[in-house]
Length: 226
Length: 255
Image (cartoon, rainbow over all chains, first blue to last red; front, side):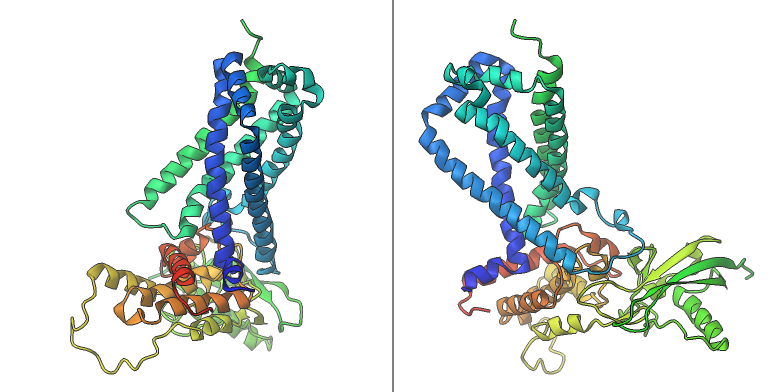
Protein backbone atom coordinates (compact mmCIF):
# COMPACT_ATOMS: atom_id res chain seq x y z
CA UNK A 1 0.00 0.00 0.00
CA UNK A 2 1.18 3.47 -0.74
CA UNK A 3 1.50 6.02 2.05
CA UNK A 4 -1.72 7.60 0.85
CA UNK A 5 -3.93 4.50 1.07
CA UNK A 6 -2.23 3.59 4.34
CA UNK A 7 -3.12 6.99 5.73
CA UNK A 8 -6.73 6.74 4.56
CA UNK A 9 -7.03 3.26 6.11
CA UNK A 10 -5.70 4.35 9.50
CA UNK A 11 -8.23 4.97 12.26
CA UNK A 12 -7.94 8.73 11.76
CA UNK A 13 -7.93 8.39 7.96
CA UNK A 14 -11.19 6.44 7.91
CA UNK A 15 -12.78 9.10 10.09
CA UNK A 16 -11.43 11.75 7.72
CA UNK A 17 -13.14 10.05 4.79
CA UNK A 18 -16.38 9.88 6.80
CA UNK A 19 -16.13 13.57 7.66
CA UNK A 20 -15.20 14.74 4.16
CA UNK A 21 -17.89 12.71 2.40
CA UNK A 22 -20.33 13.74 5.14
CA UNK A 23 -19.67 17.43 4.51
CA UNK A 24 -20.15 16.88 0.75
CA UNK A 25 -23.51 15.21 1.45
CA UNK A 26 -24.47 18.07 3.78
CA UNK A 27 -23.84 20.52 0.92
CA UNK A 28 -25.80 18.31 -1.49
CA UNK A 29 -28.77 18.29 0.91
CA UNK A 30 -28.83 22.09 0.93
CA UNK A 31 -29.06 22.22 -2.88
CA UNK A 32 -31.62 19.40 -2.96
CA UNK A 33 -33.71 21.16 -0.31
CA UNK A 34 -33.71 24.50 -2.11
CA UNK A 35 -34.90 22.72 -5.27
CA UNK A 36 -37.63 20.90 -3.39
CA UNK A 37 -38.92 23.97 -1.61
CA UNK A 38 -40.13 25.29 -4.98
CA UNK A 39 -42.89 22.69 -4.59
CA UNK A 40 -44.54 25.03 -2.11
CA UNK A 41 -44.71 27.74 -4.78
CA UNK A 42 -47.04 25.59 -6.88
CA UNK A 43 -46.73 23.49 -10.06
CA UNK A 44 -45.60 26.25 -12.42
CA UNK A 45 -42.30 27.05 -10.71
CA UNK A 46 -41.47 23.46 -9.74
CA UNK A 47 -42.13 22.11 -13.22
CA UNK A 48 -40.00 24.87 -14.76
CA UNK A 49 -37.11 24.15 -12.40
CA UNK A 50 -37.16 20.42 -13.17
CA UNK A 51 -37.55 21.10 -16.88
CA UNK A 52 -34.52 23.39 -16.81
CA UNK A 53 -32.52 20.71 -15.01
CA UNK A 54 -33.58 18.26 -17.72
CA UNK A 55 -32.00 20.67 -20.18
CA UNK A 56 -28.54 20.11 -18.67
CA UNK A 57 -28.95 16.35 -18.33
CA UNK A 58 -25.35 15.34 -19.24
CA UNK A 59 -24.00 17.59 -16.49
CA UNK A 60 -26.57 16.21 -14.05
CA UNK A 61 -25.46 12.67 -14.91
CA UNK A 62 -21.81 13.50 -14.14
CA UNK A 63 -22.83 15.05 -10.81
CA UNK A 64 -24.96 12.00 -10.05
CA UNK A 65 -22.00 9.66 -10.57
CA UNK A 66 -19.82 11.76 -8.28
CA UNK A 67 -22.62 11.95 -5.72
CA UNK A 68 -23.20 8.19 -5.84
CA UNK A 69 -19.47 7.57 -5.25
CA UNK A 70 -19.52 9.91 -2.27
CA UNK A 71 -22.57 8.13 -0.87
CA UNK A 72 -20.99 4.70 -1.38
CA UNK A 73 -17.71 5.78 0.20
CA UNK A 74 -19.59 7.21 3.20
CA UNK A 75 -21.68 4.05 3.60
CA UNK A 76 -18.77 1.65 3.01
CA UNK A 77 -16.55 3.41 5.54
CA UNK A 78 -19.38 3.75 8.03
CA UNK A 79 -20.19 0.05 7.96
CA UNK A 80 -16.52 -0.89 8.02
CA UNK A 81 -15.87 1.33 11.06
CA UNK A 82 -18.93 -0.08 12.81
CA UNK A 83 -17.75 -3.67 12.32
CA UNK A 84 -14.19 -2.87 13.40
CA UNK A 85 -15.39 -0.91 16.41
CA UNK A 86 -17.60 -3.80 17.49
CA UNK A 87 -14.55 -6.09 17.35
CA UNK A 88 -12.59 -3.73 19.60
CA UNK A 89 -14.87 -4.71 22.51
CA UNK A 90 -15.70 -8.42 22.18
CA UNK A 91 -17.27 -8.67 25.63
CA UNK A 92 -19.94 -6.13 26.58
CA UNK A 93 -20.50 -4.51 29.98
CA UNK A 94 -23.30 -5.89 32.14
CA UNK A 95 -24.42 -2.36 33.01
CA UNK A 96 -24.78 0.12 30.16
CA UNK A 97 -24.43 3.67 31.46
CA UNK A 98 -23.66 5.28 28.10
CA UNK A 99 -26.58 7.71 28.49
CA UNK A 100 -24.63 9.31 31.35
CA UNK A 101 -21.62 10.24 29.26
CA UNK A 102 -22.78 10.72 25.66
CA UNK A 103 -25.76 11.68 23.51
CA UNK A 104 -28.05 9.11 21.92
CA UNK A 105 -27.47 10.81 18.52
CA UNK A 106 -23.74 10.11 18.67
CA UNK A 107 -24.15 6.47 19.67
CA UNK A 108 -26.74 5.55 17.04
CA UNK A 109 -25.15 6.88 13.83
CA UNK A 110 -25.10 3.40 12.25
CA UNK A 111 -28.84 2.96 12.94
CA UNK A 112 -30.00 6.41 11.88
CA UNK A 113 -27.70 6.04 8.87
CA UNK A 114 -29.09 2.60 8.00
CA UNK A 115 -32.69 3.84 8.02
CA UNK A 116 -31.70 6.81 5.87
CA UNK A 117 -29.96 4.35 3.52
CA UNK A 118 -33.15 2.26 3.19
CA UNK A 119 -34.98 5.51 2.56
CA UNK A 120 -32.43 6.41 -0.10
CA UNK A 121 -33.00 3.14 -1.95
CA UNK A 122 -36.79 3.59 -1.84
CA UNK A 123 -36.44 7.25 -2.82
CA UNK A 124 -34.28 6.39 -5.84
CA UNK A 125 -36.62 3.60 -6.91
CA UNK A 126 -39.64 5.88 -6.73
CA UNK A 127 -39.08 9.64 -7.10
CA UNK A 128 -35.74 9.57 -8.87
CA UNK A 129 -36.85 6.75 -11.18
CA UNK A 130 -40.16 8.43 -12.07
CA UNK A 131 -38.46 11.76 -12.75
CA UNK A 132 -35.76 10.18 -14.92
CA UNK A 133 -37.47 7.30 -16.65
CA UNK A 134 -41.18 7.82 -16.07
CA UNK A 135 -42.11 4.34 -14.92
CA UNK A 136 -45.79 4.44 -13.95
CA UNK A 137 -45.82 8.15 -14.75
CA UNK A 138 -44.38 8.18 -18.27
CA UNK A 139 -47.20 10.36 -19.55
CA UNK A 140 -46.83 12.97 -16.78
CA UNK A 141 -43.06 12.98 -17.25
CA UNK A 142 -43.29 13.46 -21.01
CA UNK A 143 -45.61 16.42 -20.54
CA UNK A 144 -43.34 17.87 -17.84
CA UNK A 145 -45.98 17.59 -15.11
CA UNK A 146 -43.47 16.70 -12.42
CA UNK A 147 -45.52 18.37 -9.73
CA UNK A 148 -48.34 15.92 -10.42
CA UNK A 149 -45.93 12.99 -9.97
CA UNK A 150 -45.09 14.29 -6.50
CA UNK A 151 -48.77 14.79 -5.67
CA UNK A 152 -49.63 11.29 -6.82
CA UNK A 153 -46.70 9.58 -5.05
CA UNK A 154 -47.43 11.24 -1.73
CA UNK A 155 -51.12 10.35 -1.93
CA UNK A 156 -50.08 7.13 -0.18
CA UNK A 157 -50.06 7.81 3.56
CA UNK A 158 -47.78 4.84 4.25
CA UNK A 159 -45.21 6.13 1.77
CA UNK A 160 -45.43 9.62 3.27
CA UNK A 161 -45.10 8.40 6.83
CA UNK A 162 -41.99 6.48 5.82
CA UNK A 163 -40.53 9.67 4.33
CA UNK A 164 -41.35 11.65 7.48
CA UNK A 165 -39.79 9.02 9.77
CA UNK A 166 -36.68 8.84 7.62
CA UNK A 167 -36.34 12.63 7.69
CA UNK A 168 -36.52 12.70 11.51
CA UNK A 169 -33.74 10.11 11.60
CA UNK A 170 -31.81 12.16 9.07
CA UNK A 171 -32.09 15.00 11.59
CA UNK A 172 -30.60 12.73 14.28
CA UNK A 173 -27.78 11.76 11.92
CA UNK A 174 -26.97 15.33 10.88
CA UNK A 175 -27.26 16.64 14.43
CA UNK A 176 -24.23 14.58 15.42
CA UNK A 177 -22.58 14.39 12.02
CA UNK A 178 -22.14 18.09 11.38
CA UNK A 179 -20.10 18.96 14.47
CA UNK A 180 -18.45 15.53 14.45
CA UNK A 181 -16.99 16.23 11.00
CA UNK A 182 -15.37 19.43 12.23
CA UNK A 183 -13.96 17.66 15.29
CA UNK A 184 -12.50 15.00 12.99
CA UNK A 185 -10.90 17.65 10.78
CA UNK A 186 -9.34 19.03 13.93
CA UNK A 187 -11.28 22.29 13.79
CA UNK A 188 -12.16 22.20 17.45
CA UNK A 189 -11.24 25.42 19.16
CA UNK A 190 -12.98 26.98 22.12
CA UNK A 191 -13.38 30.21 20.15
CA UNK A 192 -15.50 28.85 17.34
CA UNK A 193 -16.51 25.26 18.13
CA UNK A 194 -19.60 26.28 20.16
CA UNK A 195 -20.73 28.19 17.04
CA UNK A 196 -20.14 25.11 14.85
CA UNK A 197 -22.25 23.05 17.24
CA UNK A 198 -25.06 25.63 17.07
CA UNK A 199 -24.93 25.82 13.28
CA UNK A 200 -24.94 22.01 13.14
CA UNK A 201 -27.99 21.80 15.38
CA UNK A 202 -29.90 24.46 13.43
CA UNK A 203 -28.85 23.02 10.05
CA UNK A 204 -29.83 19.47 11.04
CA UNK A 205 -33.28 20.30 12.27
CA UNK A 206 -34.16 22.91 9.65
CA UNK A 207 -33.14 20.44 6.94
CA UNK A 208 -35.06 17.57 8.52
CA UNK A 209 -38.19 19.63 9.19
CA UNK A 210 -38.31 21.28 5.76
CA UNK A 211 -37.76 17.97 3.95
CA UNK A 212 -40.40 16.32 6.13
CA UNK A 213 -42.77 19.22 5.47
CA UNK A 214 -43.10 18.08 1.84
CA UNK A 215 -44.75 14.69 2.51
CA UNK A 216 -46.69 16.25 5.41
CA UNK A 217 -48.10 18.90 3.08
CA UNK A 218 -48.89 16.63 0.15
CA UNK A 219 -50.22 13.77 2.21
CA UNK A 220 -52.32 15.64 4.74
CA UNK A 221 -53.00 19.21 3.59
CA UNK A 222 -52.89 19.32 -0.21
CA UNK A 223 -56.40 19.49 -1.70
CA UNK A 224 -55.62 19.94 -5.39
CA UNK A 225 -54.76 23.09 -7.29
CA UNK A 226 -57.09 26.03 -6.88
CA UNK B 1 -18.56 10.70 64.38
CA UNK B 2 -21.23 8.05 64.35
CA UNK B 3 -22.59 7.11 61.00
CA UNK B 4 -25.09 4.52 59.90
CA UNK B 5 -23.58 1.63 57.98
CA UNK B 6 -24.66 0.99 54.41
CA UNK B 7 -25.85 -2.47 53.54
CA UNK B 8 -24.92 -3.16 49.96
CA UNK B 9 -25.10 -5.98 47.45
CA UNK B 10 -22.00 -6.23 45.28
CA UNK B 11 -22.03 -7.96 41.92
CA UNK B 12 -18.36 -8.51 41.16
CA UNK B 13 -16.88 -9.97 37.98
CA UNK B 14 -14.80 -13.04 38.88
CA UNK B 15 -12.59 -14.61 36.25
CA UNK B 16 -9.71 -16.96 36.95
CA UNK B 17 -7.70 -15.99 33.87
CA UNK B 18 -8.05 -14.97 30.25
CA UNK B 19 -8.75 -18.53 29.13
CA UNK B 20 -11.50 -19.23 31.65
CA UNK B 21 -14.91 -17.63 31.17
CA UNK B 22 -15.88 -15.30 33.99
CA UNK B 23 -19.17 -14.47 35.70
CA UNK B 24 -20.65 -12.17 38.30
CA UNK B 25 -20.59 -13.31 41.93
CA UNK B 26 -22.82 -11.69 44.51
CA UNK B 27 -21.51 -10.49 47.88
CA UNK B 28 -23.32 -8.79 50.76
CA UNK B 29 -21.38 -6.19 52.68
CA UNK B 30 -21.99 -3.68 55.45
CA UNK B 31 -19.77 -0.64 55.13
CA UNK B 32 -19.31 2.82 56.64
CA UNK B 33 -20.28 5.70 54.31
CA UNK B 34 -16.92 7.28 55.20
CA UNK B 35 -15.08 4.32 53.70
CA UNK B 36 -13.53 4.66 50.26
CA UNK B 37 -14.56 2.28 47.51
CA UNK B 38 -11.24 0.45 47.60
CA UNK B 39 -11.35 0.20 51.40
CA UNK B 40 -14.69 -1.49 51.00
CA UNK B 41 -13.09 -4.02 48.64
CA UNK B 42 -10.24 -4.45 51.16
CA UNK B 43 -12.83 -5.21 53.85
CA UNK B 44 -14.49 -7.70 51.55
CA UNK B 45 -11.17 -9.39 50.80
CA UNK B 46 -10.28 -9.61 54.52
CA UNK B 47 -13.59 -11.28 55.09
CA UNK B 48 -13.10 -13.69 52.17
CA UNK B 49 -9.58 -14.56 53.36
CA UNK B 50 -10.79 -15.21 56.88
CA UNK B 51 -13.15 -17.77 55.35
CA UNK B 52 -10.30 -19.23 53.29
CA UNK B 53 -11.88 -18.02 50.05
CA UNK B 54 -10.03 -16.52 47.10
CA UNK B 55 -9.95 -12.69 47.49
CA UNK B 56 -11.14 -10.46 44.64
CA UNK B 57 -8.16 -9.42 42.53
CA UNK B 58 -8.16 -5.68 41.82
CA UNK B 59 -5.42 -3.15 41.22
CA UNK B 60 -4.53 -0.07 43.22
CA UNK B 61 -1.39 1.81 44.10
CA UNK B 62 -1.23 5.44 45.23
CA UNK B 63 -4.87 5.70 46.32
CA UNK B 64 -4.80 9.46 45.83
CA UNK B 65 -5.83 9.68 42.19
CA UNK B 66 -2.46 10.24 40.53
CA UNK B 67 -1.16 6.83 39.46
CA UNK B 68 -4.02 5.58 37.29
CA UNK B 69 -3.83 2.01 38.55
CA UNK B 70 -7.29 1.53 40.09
CA UNK B 71 -9.30 0.71 37.00
CA UNK B 72 -12.83 -0.44 37.78
CA UNK B 73 -16.10 0.00 35.94
CA UNK B 74 -18.69 0.75 38.61
CA UNK B 75 -22.38 0.85 37.65
CA UNK B 76 -21.34 0.89 34.01
CA UNK B 77 -19.03 3.89 34.37
CA UNK B 78 -15.22 3.78 34.54
CA UNK B 79 -14.15 5.08 37.97
CA UNK B 80 -17.78 5.15 39.07
CA UNK B 81 -20.60 7.66 38.85
CA UNK B 82 -18.78 10.75 40.16
CA UNK B 83 -17.00 12.78 37.44
CA UNK B 84 -13.29 13.66 37.43
CA UNK B 85 -12.12 11.24 40.09
CA UNK B 86 -10.33 7.90 40.03
CA UNK B 87 -11.88 4.84 41.69
CA UNK B 88 -9.67 5.32 44.75
CA UNK B 89 -11.19 8.78 45.34
CA UNK B 90 -14.74 7.44 45.26
CA UNK B 91 -16.44 7.18 48.64
CA UNK B 92 -19.27 4.99 49.78
CA UNK B 93 -21.32 8.03 50.81
CA UNK B 94 -22.16 8.35 47.12
CA UNK B 95 -24.21 5.16 47.28
CA UNK B 96 -27.57 4.51 48.91
CA UNK B 97 -28.33 1.93 51.56
CA UNK B 98 -29.60 -1.26 49.95
CA UNK B 99 -28.12 -0.44 46.54
CA UNK B 100 -26.75 -3.14 44.23
CA UNK B 101 -23.36 -2.17 42.86
CA UNK B 102 -22.02 -3.80 39.70
CA UNK B 103 -18.22 -3.93 39.55
CA UNK B 104 -16.62 -4.93 36.24
CA UNK B 105 -13.16 -4.80 34.71
CA UNK B 106 -12.30 -2.41 31.84
CA UNK B 107 -13.46 -4.20 28.73
CA UNK B 108 -11.54 -3.93 25.46
CA UNK B 109 -9.89 -6.33 23.07
CA UNK B 110 -6.63 -4.47 23.67
CA UNK B 111 -6.97 -4.93 27.46
CA UNK B 112 -7.02 -8.71 28.09
CA UNK B 113 -8.23 -9.74 31.54
CA UNK B 114 -5.49 -11.10 33.81
CA UNK B 115 -7.71 -12.01 36.73
CA UNK B 116 -11.06 -10.83 38.11
CA UNK B 117 -10.95 -7.04 37.84
CA UNK B 118 -7.33 -6.73 36.70
CA UNK B 119 -6.67 -6.12 33.02
CA UNK B 120 -3.41 -5.94 31.13
CA UNK B 121 -2.88 -2.38 29.92
CA UNK B 122 0.52 -2.98 28.32
CA UNK B 123 -1.05 -1.73 25.09
CA UNK B 124 -0.94 1.84 26.42
CA UNK B 125 2.75 1.42 27.27
CA UNK B 126 3.43 0.16 23.75
CA UNK B 127 1.82 3.29 22.29
CA UNK B 128 3.96 5.44 24.61
CA UNK B 129 7.09 3.58 23.55
CA UNK B 130 6.26 4.33 19.92
CA UNK B 131 6.76 8.06 20.37
CA UNK B 132 5.56 9.47 23.67
CA UNK B 133 8.94 10.90 24.55
CA UNK B 134 11.67 13.33 23.47
CA UNK B 135 14.85 11.67 22.14
CA UNK B 136 17.36 14.14 23.49
CA UNK B 137 19.01 14.35 26.85
CA UNK B 138 17.17 17.22 28.46
CA UNK B 139 19.86 17.68 31.12
CA UNK B 140 19.14 19.39 34.41
CA UNK B 141 16.43 21.96 35.04
CA UNK B 142 16.96 24.87 32.62
CA UNK B 143 16.91 28.52 33.68
CA UNK B 144 13.41 29.95 33.87
CA UNK B 145 12.29 31.51 30.58
CA UNK B 146 15.44 30.33 28.78
CA UNK B 147 13.02 28.92 26.22
CA UNK B 148 10.04 31.25 25.79
CA UNK B 149 6.71 29.40 25.89
CA UNK B 150 3.37 31.21 25.59
CA UNK B 151 1.39 30.99 28.82
CA UNK B 152 -1.60 29.57 26.94
CA UNK B 153 0.45 26.71 25.45
CA UNK B 154 2.14 25.92 28.74
CA UNK B 155 -1.29 25.61 30.32
CA UNK B 156 -2.73 23.42 27.57
CA UNK B 157 0.35 21.22 27.61
CA UNK B 158 0.07 20.78 31.37
CA UNK B 159 -3.64 19.95 31.00
CA UNK B 160 -2.75 17.22 28.49
CA UNK B 161 0.10 16.00 30.70
CA UNK B 162 -2.41 15.51 33.53
CA UNK B 163 -3.35 12.20 31.82
CA UNK B 164 -2.52 9.39 34.25
CA UNK B 165 -2.81 6.70 31.56
CA UNK B 166 -5.50 4.79 33.44
CA UNK B 167 -7.35 3.78 30.28
CA UNK B 168 -10.79 4.98 31.42
CA UNK B 169 -11.22 6.62 28.00
CA UNK B 170 -10.84 3.21 26.35
CA UNK B 171 -13.21 1.64 28.88
CA UNK B 172 -15.84 4.37 28.40
CA UNK B 173 -15.70 4.52 24.60
CA UNK B 174 -18.32 2.45 22.84
CA UNK B 175 -15.59 1.59 20.31
CA UNK B 176 -12.86 0.95 22.93
CA UNK B 177 -10.83 3.64 21.20
CA UNK B 178 -7.66 5.00 22.80
CA UNK B 179 -7.83 8.33 20.98
CA UNK B 180 -8.11 10.49 24.11
CA UNK B 181 -5.09 8.84 25.74
CA UNK B 182 -2.96 9.03 22.59
CA UNK B 183 -4.04 12.60 21.85
CA UNK B 184 -3.06 13.70 25.36
CA UNK B 185 0.37 12.13 24.98
CA UNK B 186 0.78 13.70 21.52
CA UNK B 187 -0.47 17.11 22.64
CA UNK B 188 1.68 17.53 25.72
CA UNK B 189 4.74 17.64 23.43
CA UNK B 190 3.13 19.19 20.36
CA UNK B 191 2.40 22.32 22.39
CA UNK B 192 5.96 22.83 23.63
CA UNK B 193 9.12 23.89 21.75
CA UNK B 194 10.97 20.80 23.01
CA UNK B 195 8.44 18.59 21.27
CA UNK B 196 8.71 20.22 17.83
CA UNK B 197 11.60 18.27 16.21
CA UNK B 198 9.72 14.98 16.51
CA UNK B 199 6.21 16.40 16.40
CA UNK B 200 5.04 14.88 13.11
CA UNK B 201 7.00 11.65 13.40
CA UNK B 202 5.57 11.12 16.89
CA UNK B 203 1.91 11.45 15.93
CA UNK B 204 2.28 9.06 13.01
CA UNK B 205 4.19 6.43 14.98
CA UNK B 206 1.80 6.53 17.94
CA UNK B 207 -1.35 6.34 15.80
CA UNK B 208 0.16 3.46 13.81
CA UNK B 209 0.82 1.41 16.95
CA UNK B 210 -2.59 2.34 18.38
CA UNK B 211 -4.25 0.93 15.24
CA UNK B 212 -2.15 -2.24 15.32
CA UNK B 213 -3.14 -3.02 18.91
CA UNK B 214 -6.83 -3.42 18.13
CA UNK B 215 -8.32 -0.26 19.60
CA UNK B 216 -11.42 1.06 17.84
CA UNK B 217 -11.86 4.35 16.01
CA UNK B 218 -13.29 7.58 17.38
CA UNK B 219 -17.02 8.25 16.90
CA UNK B 220 -16.84 11.65 18.63
CA UNK B 221 -19.36 10.64 21.29
CA UNK B 222 -17.09 12.38 23.82
CA UNK B 223 -17.81 9.69 26.45
CA UNK B 224 -14.04 9.59 27.09
CA UNK B 225 -13.91 13.23 28.17
CA UNK B 226 -16.95 12.76 30.42
CA UNK B 227 -15.39 9.76 32.17
CA UNK B 228 -11.75 10.90 32.30
CA UNK B 229 -10.68 11.26 35.95
CA UNK B 230 -8.41 14.13 34.92
CA UNK B 231 -10.88 15.88 32.62
CA UNK B 232 -8.66 15.60 29.52
CA UNK B 233 -10.39 17.54 26.73
CA UNK B 234 -11.41 16.08 23.37
CA UNK B 235 -9.80 19.19 21.87
CA UNK B 236 -6.62 17.13 22.19
CA UNK B 237 -8.13 14.61 19.77
CA UNK B 238 -8.82 17.46 17.34
CA UNK B 239 -5.20 18.59 17.73
CA UNK B 240 -3.94 15.07 17.11
CA UNK B 241 -6.11 14.70 13.99
CA UNK B 242 -4.81 18.05 12.73
CA UNK B 243 -1.18 17.07 13.35
CA UNK B 244 -1.78 13.69 11.73
CA UNK B 245 -3.14 15.25 8.51
CA UNK B 246 -0.35 17.83 8.44
CA UNK B 247 2.18 15.05 9.03
CA UNK B 248 0.82 13.03 6.11
CA UNK B 249 0.81 16.01 3.77
CA UNK B 250 4.01 17.76 4.69
CA UNK B 251 6.60 15.25 5.92
CA UNK B 252 8.69 13.20 3.54
CA UNK B 253 9.25 10.02 5.54
CA UNK B 254 6.54 7.38 5.14
CA UNK B 255 5.44 5.91 8.45
